[in-house]
Image (tube, rainbow, N blue to C red):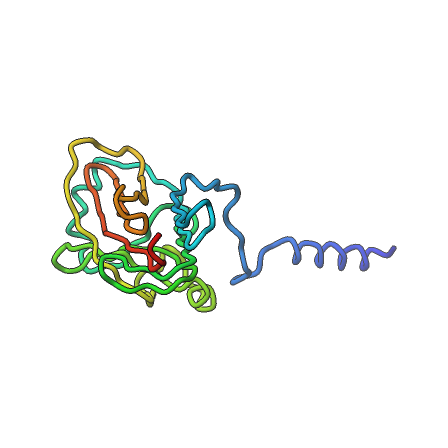
Length: 195
């Protein structure tokens, strides 16, 4: 091989080894789902409806309380790592808002007065639009469901979401989100035949 060929090979190799400006980069790695909450409705384990929320659970930091005014008027990521996902096989109401069966990504909205809502983004539409959990300003939610905010005495060091039945009517439950000394909640009613 000539010296000229060696130089050409070295230049081509160096050019391929250096990332080009604007080249696609990949980020991430293992991120196990930290938690899930789910409900199943139906007699004798014959499902008439199923709900499941899966999320990464971030830890609480005391300085978050001082940032409350900064989040007013914004759409906010819910959870950590990838999207918090919500799947429902039945239509339902969340905080009185009618929601169709389907697959959704979840976010939060804090309005200008500091009132919170649960945002449901159609997963297929969000994926087609290249949406991400941290691009809240560009989201177009399919549903905006009001949440009630209350204070708690016990601090949740890690975010916890739950779906819990009311013990009386099988298809009625409450969604709660606890983080720090804050709780957000909404009633959920699944649209299934009475059992």
